[in-house]
Amino acid sequence: MVTAMKIRADRDVCIGAGLCLMTAEEVFDQDDDGVVVLLTPTPAPELEEKARRAVRSCPSGALSMEE
Ligand code: SF4
Image 1 (cartoon, helix red, strand yellow):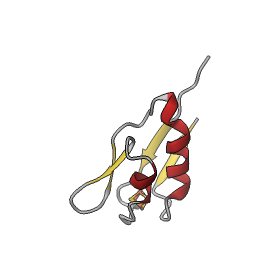
Image 2 (cartoon, helix red, strand yellow):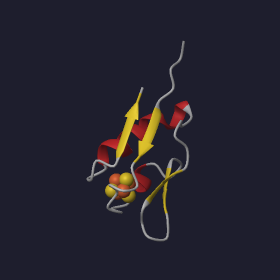
Image 3 (cartoon, helix red, strand yellow):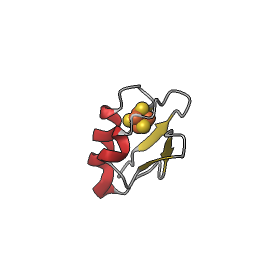
């Protein structure tokens, strides 16, 4: 069985650094205030590694994931 990853983005914790979308623009965006917008909490398999890197790159701890 394949278990998909599930990403969470806490918009109250995000400091708008933008690293996540620079790393995985298919998964993350920013709103007009610079706060993260999660485009897809369950990225396609080919995007999972990028999404993982983005979660690790977040300086504020706003991003987390379950696998
Ligand atoms: S990397 Fe973290 S702090 Fe920066 S925009 Fe993304 S969620 Fe927010």
